[in-house]
Length: 408
Ligand SMILES: [Zn+2]
Image (cartoon, rainbow, N blue to C red; front, top):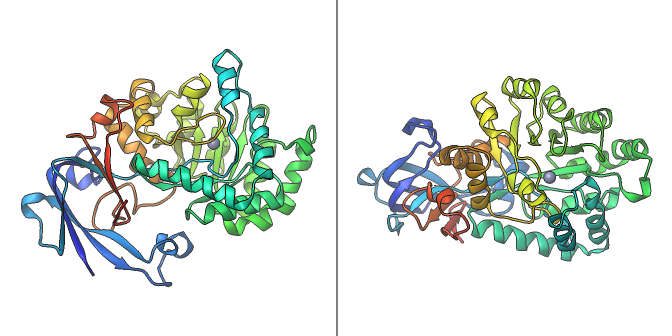
């Protein structure tokens, strides 16, 4: 098995508590990456990246450069800061068309409501599988160029059994992290009959789509699905073996957070409207609060109270929420800058939330961290430290990305 030494790292974020502090920083660091040839019999089965790559690079050693062992090859990081690849736990990449006009109208004063999703629904249904897949590839490439090495992808712009299934098939061709967002909006053919749509999702869509996904998700929001409808969809997903994610408390106060905690959700996402009970429930749970401030930026929505959430002990993830309506960005560095400036996380907290936090939201411990055995997902910054991600907003600081041991 070939080994590669990455040395001359000016500052390394490991997210490994063994190195101290929140980020486990190591100055003047080195990493050794070992290639691992994967067979069909990996322990984590369908969730493994092995279905996408024959050779997976894993971290074999981490430490001070002066202690580094010899290796077959060497990469000189040139004094750059290196951190784990960003982990995006919330994206909607299977779509066609865009909503630039809607964005312009919103910026001119129109308010965002959940219904804009329907225009993407029509465009997505009319697109071919190849067009949808090419769009996912294009957006994943954007994500990777800006340092994101893991991306969860939701369905949700099909909203019929056949279109949700093919959305998940397209997504599963690109990532092992797929989510059935069956209840995104009530599609036009069910207008005024949300309960009938929910029944169809439960009786017809989930049985066919569940094998293609790891999680079920619902948009629990005024204008989308209420608490009872959301609970019915989510528990049906659980019975089909899926984990739970929830779009909750984005546009209004509501039951999404409490429902997510009640059902043991992996994550509740947006979380812009929180009261004391919501925060207490999250803090006492294993449910991650995934904050998506680029969506709030793009809709002039209220930002989540990340400072209070973090200080209460809630586990926070940051995501870009790439989608054509409310957050058409793939830039985790932009999200980090927003989280620091607008959500009042510290730069260290924001970097942790965009890496280790995202991994928690996906229930994974081999990504978002650089320690022995972790996936060799490395971001090299044209900067001396991770602080520059928030300090230099809008600047393309990502120099090189290594994804599972492979330089892109
Ligand atoms: Zn979303």
